[in-house]
Image (cartoon, rainbow, N blue to C red; front, side):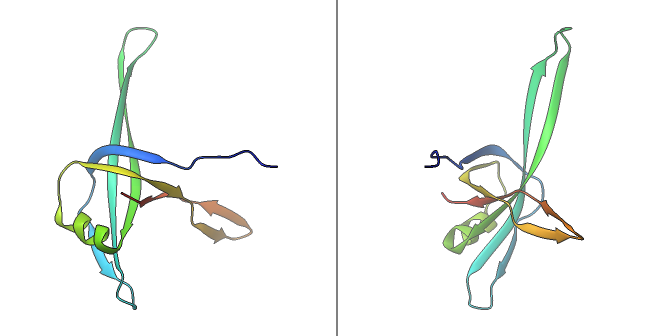
Length: 101
């Protein structure tokens, strides 16, 4: 029996690019956008450090249309997924965030 697991992503950050709204051939709305998050800490020597991380986010349906209209700081609660891409004989993974709420 395998242990239960949780795949939950929570981000609060800023848009890194304008949202890109498109529609699938069947008419479903899809919106791709980027979110930057920052973290800061103090080193053992007392120096301040800061690091930024960049996240690729995708929203579907009515939520995609809503995401396309707002160009403000964003909060995302979602599920992360890794679409697999064939790279020669290896498989690489790029994390994307699928917006749920």
